[in-house]
Image 1 (cartoon, protein in one colour):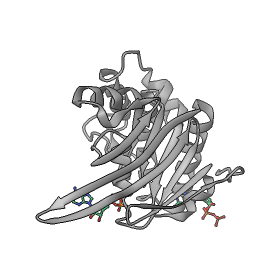
Image 2 (cartoon, rainbow, N blue to C red; image 1 turned 45 degrees about the vertical axis):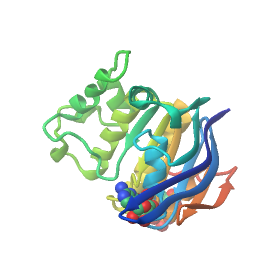
Image 3 (cartoon, helix red, strand yellow; image 1 turned 60 degrees about the vertical axis):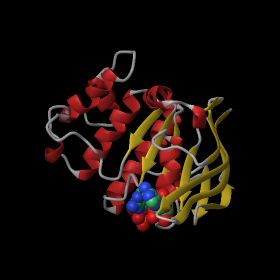
Length: 229
Ligand code: ADP
Ligand code: ADP
């Protein structure tokens, strides 16, 4: 079933009397449980797209429909609620809170959901139960990204939005993180959307959406994505 639809989405940034079109009539759909890679060079509009989908920024015109709701017409309270319930964010540089342990970083999410979170169980799911009491600085980059994925899935979001999730990692560690995201997508039936400039990630995807200059160049469905390990 359909989870996400972008319909004629435009996003303009104004600087002085110059208008930059960061999203130029963008249309695409994503189904529940899909593993999607949005691929494009720097400046293509990838972060803009992710911010719009994640309810962090608003469109200039067009529609964004998620689970049947028009999020482009949400007010601030509705957007806060939407982000809390639907969206798990994963960033290139992890964005963990440095003075909290791995477990505490995950348990923070208790404040945004209305069910109980078993932080240790979630850490176990990403293979880091033994590191519950470690602070971010005591963890490798790959481990920090695992904690940030655990934090994101703890909310049981309908989608994981990942901005260059392997961008700060060496290729071996990057592959392990990609494998973990693929695993989560399959096991939890969570829709995963990754934006990246790194074409190697697209091997793992069910759907690859290429963007350039704020426009969709192509949408390719891959029935047999590579199982990363
Ligand atoms: P990507 O993530 O693919 O590198 P972005 O979505 O960050 O691309 O940016 C797309 C375009 O929009 C770029 O030309 C960028 O300079 C511009 N842009 C992004 N954010 C802003 C902003 N807040 N104000 C003005 N221009 C912006
Ligand atoms: P090989 O040379 O055998 O392809 P790699 O470790 O380079 O070994 O890649 C194995 C797989 O891991 C790739 O096909 C790709 O799916 C994934 N991968 C490699 N590098 C990265 C990276 N930087 N980020 C994410 N995934 C990666």
